[in-house]
Image (tube, rainbow, N blue to C red; front, side, top):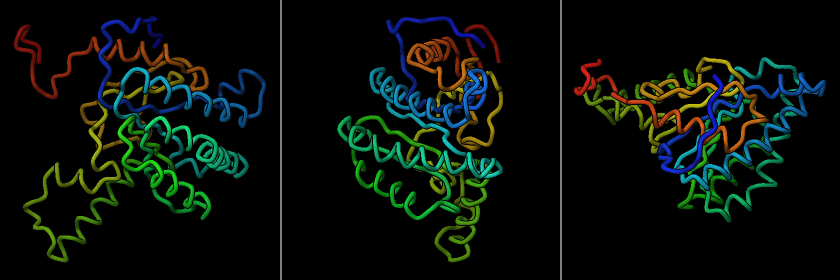
Length: 249
């Protein structure tokens, strides 16, 4: 949906914003450019969005960078995406650290090259404990896989006698997820006009507000983020309850 322009006055930022960064390929195709150019432009949008989140005072930002289903793409495109992750960490880590950003990268390490795993671990260890924006990047991530992995580990701990089955509740389950310690997203934004979750934060988005934006990810900027937050501020979040004032349920 197209969103109106909005000023930052009286803007109340959500605690946690998650974004499905969609449309790099279509952005490139519309300009008769290779898909790689779309992904490169997408990295520039990541930088701008992280900067905007800091300026707007958003405490938690989670970006969907590469899904576990993306391995189905052509090998050349996968290689390009891996190269962009390498470059982003190498080129931006110092600045992220200077800006007090804490980086967390969630997703399985399966199929990742050893040097990428080393860079991921470096980014996390270097910025651990920083008190500014908590930036989480979901890379080689799938929400259903995350849930299955949590179930496996809970079952193993129960079999080992570490936990009792009747003690398992939603709060305990959440501690076994890759996002343990993060609040659930308040606002989830998806660019490019598509309106689906695409296996992103499947458990965590039970009561998240969704805003769908027509712009392709490389065109996403601070104005889009402000407009999405403005729309979020208009929503009434009842978490399964009801509005006592007007009787809505």
